[in-house]
Length: 254
Image (spheres, helix red, strand yellow):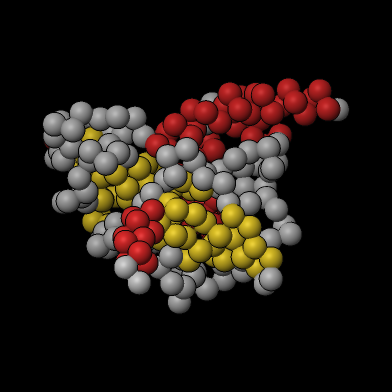
């Protein structure tokens, strides 16, 4: 059994590396034009609408993890070189074009639309393929901007896994399932992007607290999604490197 576990861990490590690299995004030419006419390109960035609906199903199945948080998605630049100014989303199919409103923070909602489903529509951005990516954005109302709830992150993982698993190579997908799935296994690391360089992330539930591991560049953190000893109401409080640097000179003058 220990040998089988180690073998599985080694295989998972090989499979996880490309997935984590995809999260960071491959470098793009900063001078390349990223905004394109959806109708004028044969290769726009897209996701099948029927595939995205699997995320809505997963949200409904696991909503107990974040009972007051609405399901939204977020359109993100794959690298800092990509500007999101002027980004748009549409559901596109033959004789069908439905605009999907993007909020100022890049989030959007998807509704169930029988016409789009029957037409096998695609969710299409006006950007070149691989220049943008999507993520679930599930946030319980009322939390401070620098605080996340662990149940929200767990639900985001369920939604993302439901949408993305069928696109994974057969071996990687089944290894993940064998390990219990990325949202439930201690053998699979699921890093989350922070959006800013982190100074630290404190996990707290009642009187219990611990600092979470950060990536080498301090732009990602790894919450304990699988660990049921941390309940869904556990809070993650973020501190950021730029804020700590700004506070240091002020402390020296006191």
